Length: 468
Image 1 (cartoon, rainbow, N blue to C red):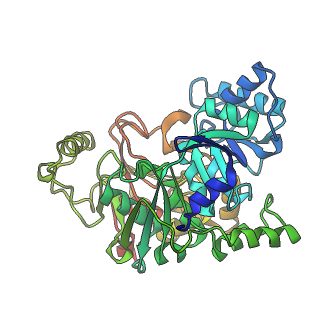
Image 2 (cartoon, rainbow, N blue to C red):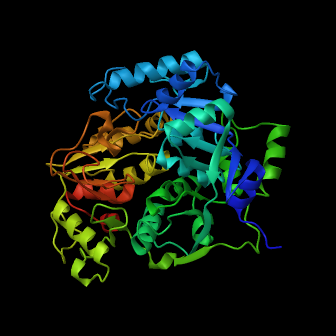
């Protein structure tokens, strides 16, 4: 009998019933909701007079629609946005679940606060009506995004029917070069194997390139597993993970901590585990990476050029590239480095943790945003904001000409009512660059926080390594 992958182990541990055909009824350890969709599931249960099962395991935060402008309240820039907030608040309070409201010091982006509060732990299953729930796989959790109907079922029963995905392992060998980040790693992977390269798979990220990463950088890798088309992403927990979790509000303590760590140390793929697909990437081949198109798979090294779609044999890929170039107002052969921008955004569940802000602040310190560029920093949580301000990062950013905001999803997408202008060219630390993602006809280039910061200073896509 061959060994098991980490996902297979967690699948077995959480199987309530084998439903046949590769599907199972899985026990769900934690459920997280936000104000954009959370009220739908809660209100459905209330209408049917069904209580939330184990309400202590259910959490709600305000992140998607809430404004990030200083002095914010229930009013939003999004038309009818206030209704989402009021409805979700009322539904959460009526259900008796944990609510991180707008003024709560625990408020923030769902995938950021879930980790930093110790709500998500290694080995847990966790769901949320948000596709980037896979972020939490960086803790060794089996986490994925769901729809509102599934949310209702999970709230009522603590279970969900799930079709078992195939298994893939992506191994990063070697060491990253100076100035190359985890964001560059995942963009490189998606660019090389396409935005559908992980479709149908649960992906384990492994190898020395992963284990050498600080914990917060690992969240970025797993966050964008869904942009690779994957069901979820996961990284086996290790001593780095345990040290990061210890002492957090919802983490176990005392004797329970010792028991938990003993169990967590068993959460890894067996040496003889068989994966359906294996990908190996040498970290030495990765440079700071930027997207040029309207998919996270349309990437190039920052020193590279916009590719020529005519060189692509695949008809569908060629047409998609042609359409992307038209939207982005680019032509084949153009250099990405030096391409003028009008806005820079640092934030989102991908790259708005304290370490991300520290990396960006190191680039901008003592410098100033280029005239004509609007630059914004939105911390991933109120705690991140508070910790950054304790280090003086807010002053570094504001002295450099950045806007310093409250925590939330903000302009990762413009569901919050705020957007960049029509045909503005934005460089962003977020996870998606689809057409109209950050505003009507807005042109978005994805990059690491350091690259975004350097570009804001230069007024054009820039390599942070060249700023010193």
